[in-house]
Length: 240
Ligand SMILES: Nc1ncnc2c1ncn2[C@@H]1O[C@H](COP(=O)(O)OP(=O)(O)OP(=O)(O)O)[C@@H](O)[C@H]1O
Image 1 (cartoon, rainbow, N blue to C red):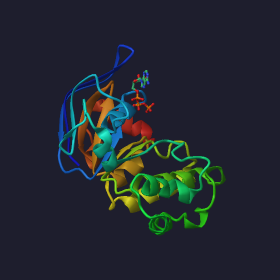
Image 2: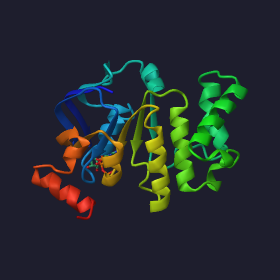
Image 3: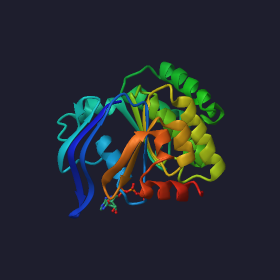
């Protein structure tokens, strides 16, 4: 993925949540957005996913200008989103959740959609749960279904906002392993507090604090950073 930012501003109730002067990222495959709570990570991800609209400035994803995007439909076809929880329609089965867009948005034949969905559900280890309703799943199974649902329509970029933070450690591990397996399928941007996971998963990081990008670079640099604020943050989170 390529991301270009110029003077990007997003405020909530007169408080600046994001204020980024400039950023130019090229050919990133997996990006981790990290930093302290309330720093603006989710807001930045929401801007990238057109869930929130910036007040001003320029934000380009793979060459497409997102600020003031007139027809977001074609862009939305290219991206997938996974949130902390509640990604699925509760009254549908896992299979129905995963096939619904294929059938109704992409007009795929139901049988073809089912075959494709079963292939993906098998890949993430939850095929045996395909006929269950969402409330019958563990949190980890639900998140794996959400990942399949977001990717199956051919998303070129998957955005994940703390996808494991509502899960207990073992279930979080299952979801992290699923993401590791899915890395080859598409580019991904993840907001996460799981720095050990980010270290293995991502190839690049953005450190966001007080709405600004304090540092960015190849992921390994995050763990040997000269900036004392970043060192302090990494040491605390990794319990050094
Ligand atoms: N919908 C909203 N209305 C008003 N203020 C908001 C809204 N969403 C976020 N904010 C504020 O914007 C700032 C950035 O929030 P954001 O959720 O992006 O941070 P974050 O880094 O993702 O935090 P966390 O790690 O706790 O999820 C915070 O001060 C927050 O209170």
